[in-house]
Amino acid sequence: MKNRKIIHYLHEKNQSKFGRIIIITGARQTGKTTLIKKSFPDYSYLSIEDPVSRSTYLNLTAQQWANLYPYALLDEIQKEPALIESIKATYDQFTEPRYVLLGSSQLLLMEKVRESLAGRCTIIEIYPLTLPELQTQSWDEEISESLFQKLLKNVENEYFPSFLLDKSRSKKIEAYTHYLKYGGFPAISENDSTEDEKFDWLQNYVRTYLERDIRDLASFRDLEPFIKLQQYLALNTGNLVNASAISKLLGISVKTVQRYINYFEISYQAIILPSWTGNPNKRLVKSPKVHYMDQGVVQAVLHKRGGMTGREYESAIIAEMYKQAKNIQSLAQLSFLRTQDNKEVDLLLEFPDYFYAFEIKMANKVHKGDAKHLFGLEKILNKPVRKAFVISNDEETKHFDNNIIAVNAAMFLG
Image (cartoon, rainbow, N blue to C red):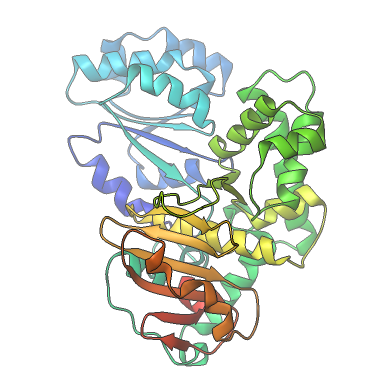
């Protein structure tokens, strides 16, 4: 069992006065239930998926909730949103009870949360495993923070001249190789299943997502248009999203395309990365980019095994950085930059007073030319670039000037 970084934040929030109701949301099979049971062993576990039990819970008064279930985990709460009203009533009438509500559908869950629990709850999102988490073998094993996470915390990093000097190299490489091939879902993170079993699991995951999550989000009579868009986005992960062009290609209305893309984002299947447009004096591309959250899912959607395109690699790295930033509650704003004359930076991390900039290359060897878009960014951005990086598979660390460094992806993120 892999340890999870978010546990410490969960405990911290649970012990605060603002943690009496915690909302846990995230994609299906990201380990929410296992994590919460481990984090709160003294809480009663109530599965709202069971229709018989569900009707019983609906009939409980606030007083009965406080007496019978003063500390409880309510799993798949979106199956019966009316229960959120019961939890709200219990919260308002009694000071002792504490609840953790779990749901895999952000849309259905959050609509009711906004209506009933605004100002009363803390929302925590759970993602597939990160590279540091993949390296652990038990709940008790400490999770090392990556160089990237330390950077986000303003810790001064020492970058080895070569990844070969990193004492944790073998563990980092093993986790990195697994991640690029199978993704980060906990169920297939161990070495107790074959390659065939792992890919079968991913195929079943995609099927379940379509049959359950998407049918929960919208009463589709015909899933074919959504499946077409799913395949299109998988083929085009790492590319700009142009709803009008997609509409013409797939024969779906622009509004439907926009709505379906929103479903992918709110069901944690994709990251819709906005373009940075903070300089009105520059001609900047405004369309967002799509990045699939998990490379294993991309392969399952496309019915392929192994091998990556450059865009898939970019998405895998950006998804990893996104998850790692979220896991430490970083306030960084993520975007990308593209000018009309094709100067492009794959990822910008924006803080109140500065940026970090990243160029992502799948190459085993990088050169100064690979960093060309990182030079002169101050002429476009409205804040200084504290440091810029080329992230690649090159084992050697290279300094292209005082502010631009090339580092190995597994070393930097593992």
